[in-house]
Length: 299
Length: 299
Image 1 (cartoon, rainbow over the protein chains, first blue to last red):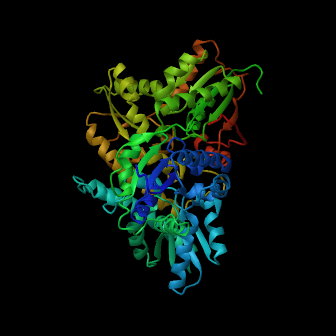
Image 2 (cartoon, rainbow over the protein chains, first blue to last red; image 1 turned 180 degrees about the horizontal axis):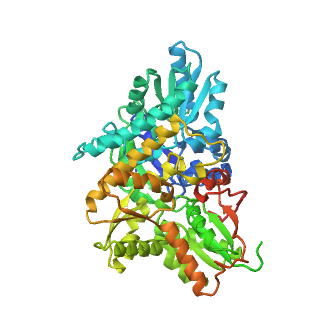
Image 3 (cartoon, chains in turn red, green; image 1 turned 30 degrees about the horizontal axis):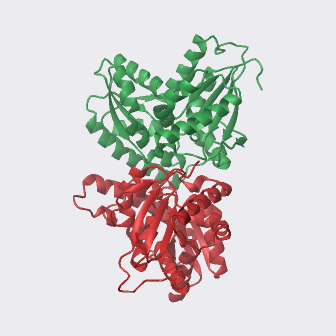
């Protein structure tokens, strides 16, 4: 595909990690990105640590076989529970989504000159792992962690109004039904954020700790304003993409900014439900995903 | 456990099938029920047919090893996609959830003297399989199928108000937050049912084609009244329990109604997430589930 460039492996339990790839592509000119969604075994969130480590290792090995020279774990659950095991087992650099997000939140707190408290929204499994709280504590930040389990299904069903880039596709017309659906999501956000803000009186930054949540960023920002607490929203997908760029540059692997590097190329694999990936992928990636190839990792 | 009685195996991808077991227990006096929730590999709904057949077979074999002499497939997706394979592979009687529900809906239509049209609510995977439409067609019924993907997460999160029997537990007090949560579910039901009823002008019966939906029965009935279309709601969990009772009786295996048979006993297995099973199980079973044993089926 791209004989001279670097191959970057990106993996997630599903297609949520495409929000990370989306941010990465403009920063990884000249590279070839191989994305694997382990859709046969999702959601990782309800599985045990042992199971998640096993799944993450088999996904990572597949990407290495496809030539990956750097691995992005674009999945909060896998980062929370399997990052150390992946780094131990693999010889290539491994970047997770948690540390970059927490560093960005820490920088946002410093910029605002506020007490070091950040509100983290994530899935039940990520919250229960307390991976964000631990990463925050190392930077002197207090994390207020809030599980928001209904947000992933709402995003996957597309009940997110008109904001998602993938929705602004030709032929897509807003209807009264769309508005009713988006109002359900707004009501759910009012409940989650209303509760979370009470627990986080000193927070001035909110960290999106799930790869699905960037699609709700505008709805979350609107709800924060409505509730009188316009926290700065930090997108860990963006932060992770910048962390990958730094690793590439540190290791002399970076092509970013080179005018002759050309656009990054992509190919997509899924362990099941290829059709759902092809249907929902564009909503997360912000552009067509084309053909998704089915791969069997066992299990 | 129960040396003289029959052992009944009940399996589902998760704990939703406990609504079937709940209806079955009063009809299966003297029996021992072994329930397996294949929580490591849920949701089946997003998996391919081949994968679901493989999962269902390994779950069924585990239950046979535990002594099951009759198998209840208390999972709509597994019934839709794997019932024939299970019947072919196993030597014990196998009862699924679809046929009993459809027969009950057909009887309800006849009782009401109406045209044979029934509205079926189910998950995306069940609807896409058109298993209900096929089963209905065989009885001369037209099925209007409506996928309601958000209902399972809403039930699992307990956003269902005060109606669920498992919620009426000591120390459980309704709060303003509970009311706000239940109103989200009501709004979602208005959207799904509003759309579905437009497509089903002649329907006088509504079939709950997912094992989670009995927990929403009252909310669904309220919404139908609100929308001016008070359809008769058919619970396939109840219909399946009666079908099991019939099979037991036909095969001379029935103890039901025998005053000396004693209460049915239960044991519970899950392939992962035992804690979640123990926490949510009582909401579905309507009584405590006690200790859930972890079992590894591979994969």
